[in-house]
Image (cartoon, rainbow, N blue to C red; front, top):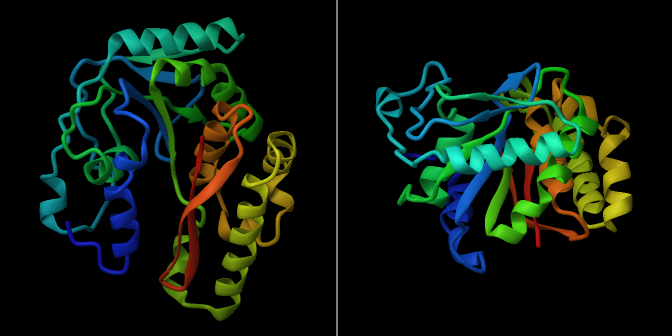
Length: 245
């Protein structure tokens, strides 16, 4: 794939697997591209791809990522959610959106790790996504990798504008995000739930669907402190990626 301007992010994703202590037995992922009224889990054995983007080169609509699903893992996810009082549903037909298969093509190119995708709340509720993550924390002890995919900055109109004022705002928000995720878990979670008070929050995220997968991952992190593992400036905007544990 061609990644003009995004080469550093591509390299980061391509090197992700070797930084893990061992190959995951499965992956549970929440992306910024699936919203439902009730948290919903993919249960299909062979999820298709959803090419949910427009105006891209023709070859991007022929990309394949044949990673298997896992009805067993999906049922386990549902059981954990229900045990924690979170109503949920399943979807046997739903495929992987580009928030999953694009980064996974780079990070896990063999497509041999079972993947289950989990939707976010259509209410865009940060506290809800954190609770969902907290409910699924036990999966980490079962060698299940929990991933939230989105963007630390997601204002597409400003991406194209090149406004210097917006550029500085992205740095301010990115700095706040780093300080927040590297704080103690209690402080981190309190700050994340009040993310709208961060400098430039609503400029960087006019709609928060690309930020909320971070709340999910932070919830699953438990007592692990976060660290920034990717930092770059893309099209004038500061971007970061984080991990826990």
